[in-house]
Image (cartoon, rainbow, N blue to C red; front, side, top):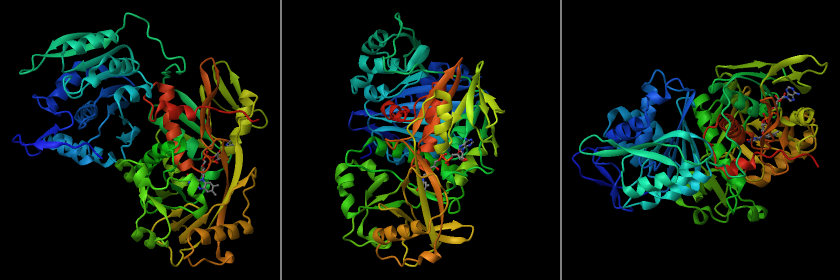
Length: 622
Ligand SMILES: Cc1cc2nc3c(=O)[nH]c(=O)nc-3n(C[C@H](O)[C@H](O)[C@H](O)COP(=O)(O)OP(=O)(O)OC[C@H]3O[C@@H](n4cnc5c(N)ncnc54)[C@H](O)[C@@H]3O)c2cc1C
């Protein structure tokens, strides 16, 4: 449940927000706006400090009602010398509702447009990280939901500024103790500036112990003093043994091999950060591989133990849905329909028995049990059991690929089949089959679906453990008796997708391991029809002769998670592998691209370290 806030009468239209949990006000006696500007921004030397910088990374303890974020975002937008990217990472143990965040901003009309946009992102805030994107991906808010000490251990970046906020040290001592400050220090570099409004002795002592040098500075009356400082420990800070050193590569030239979802997403994420990106593909149009799928589903995965895959699928679904909303045409390229996942009688053991019992309330923004009306409206009976995923949609992958490739800074080249990579004095050369150099760059990303196997082997000498899984989808004219929403759980069914020939119902798909051929098979249409008959027994199925289809080859890893990993580095020139999207390229491609960008530039992680690590291993073929 969202945090309970009492709105006390204070003569303003919205009232003064008060926390019954902590017995404290959300805003200082100065008012939240002045505090955000004078204590935090000015206290960290902003906006002057970020001028001319490629990116600026702010860490805040205590998101509260989001006022510091809104004021910082507004200052960034108003500054002609703003950095290309603004990262704002904020921890929050007890997230307020979207409505309370919006209500709190009503007192400051110039912030209302910002707050209104933020409001639309504040849903499903389960424990863990949530990456929210604004300003075409140039302002990124990473909300880390949970205890600050614990969530900061799952983050990995070097903050440029730190805002220490929260309820008063008397009311909520945990957020001001040495353990929290040590966790904050893990995300600082020498020189990171900090600012806060409390000058409590215990806070100053704990900050000094954690390596911060602090001083009192005059406050704006009636507040006498604030605290400012920087991270400058008397000792040499050590990274934990299992941590990657934080890279801060400057944007340069990158070549991506493959223009499916994976390659196009990487190209867009890097170009947004200032890279010049050339995307090469052996085909003569983009999205010619598995991403040529006419339409697919993006939906969260659910499991009894909320597995790694389930959590990753939520991170990915949130980010993809936002990309669709920002870049695609509704009902033409995608539709935010939601998806019903039918629990087939023999699939029970892999699924939670009842989401409403197993999950806290924020989870119902993602998924909940379907009610009788929803079951009936989608061709199921009350005796059937199904989850209703709200954060779910059908999407045409090729439309997303096209939109990502249109990012300024990206250029696409077809009929360019890469046969291998050779390192040459600080760069990597991409060779064709007769040894001609097709392109050369200091950063190469192999995102060539199953074609990545040979390319990665040309770099490392060992083929990675990737498997080809052929699949065929089928469609016919829109079917009589079809419900309103896509249904999955035993294959999938999308009731209405607009294709060139008109509105169709799409269903499938088949799974054929170790098969790389893409030709259509009549038997696969029959298999897809049989499966559809079991998934939705009430449907009026078409004759096999009236069915058309498409086939492609998925590229999967043994663990069914994508692989995102640097596989070679010569004189600073790197080769990365970004593939293995399996059956969830729509959910994973953009997540992987943003994670890669974060790792290259020392940006905050868009997902918890333990989840990021699960994607970072490139197992070799047995
Ligand atoms: C039948 C079917 C149904 C599916 N349903 C869904 C779904 O509902 N939801 C979902 O999320 N996912 C679904 N998927 C999976 C999804 O399509 C993939 O995960 C995704 O498209 C993979 O994208 P990719 O960029 O990794 O690979 P691809 O799209 O295959 O792109 C690889 C690109 O690399 C190029 N290439 C290969 N080798 C070379 C080379 N040597 N030189 C130059 N270029 C090269 C290829 O031409 C291709 O364009 C489905 C897949 C299939 C087959």
